[in-house]
Image (cartoon, rainbow, N blue to C red; front, side, top):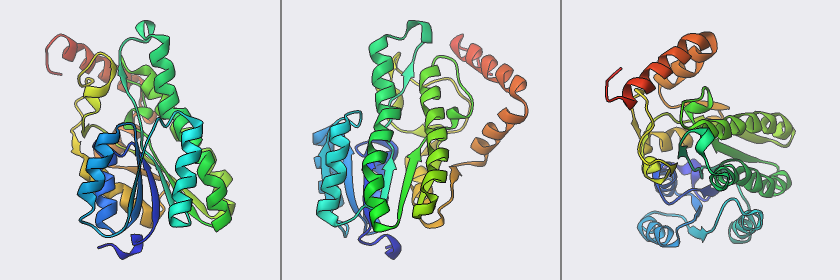
Length: 268
């Protein structure tokens, strides 16, 4: 058991599947008290039952992270149950696969409300408690595609870019209160994400290797100990992000070529 997380109060959004679920398991194995937030009540209940084998307490709360009142309630319940809030992990996210010109307005609002407004609602709800206790850690789960857009998922990329800049601004604003802010950039990860996309289902074109959700979860836990401000999961993710900054034109050409060949059934 990782004793440094024992009895820490951690609120995790998007906890019922993928990276969120893997992180919930890793936190429970470390002895943390975890508030599990997601939309699907039945999945949360099954997860709580599974995690009962580990030390610490679990509290499940089903709701929509894009609902400001729900965010306030979730943080209030966390503090009422555990007396504090040590870490907020803003993991809940929604993707899409469609041309921007064809994306319905309802899908645009739903994606932005989940990926950006939900993060803001939970963060704003958590900050007063963290300021009062004189410490805290906010971890925002972004994406490697926040570093450069891919075709057919422009709004998702834009929403994750917003996460990056919000995190950097928060880091400067909250440093005087001893509140750390970390942004994590997962690349292609083995999850159900592709099955839950708005628009067309299935994976987006990319030749980046996929990693397990467990590997991302371990990177998140490591960030809790190191306080590192920005975390990449693999060296290829880091290279993708920084290569784009150095050679944006070449990266455009490469991404467009890969997308074109994938859409016509050819390998790049």
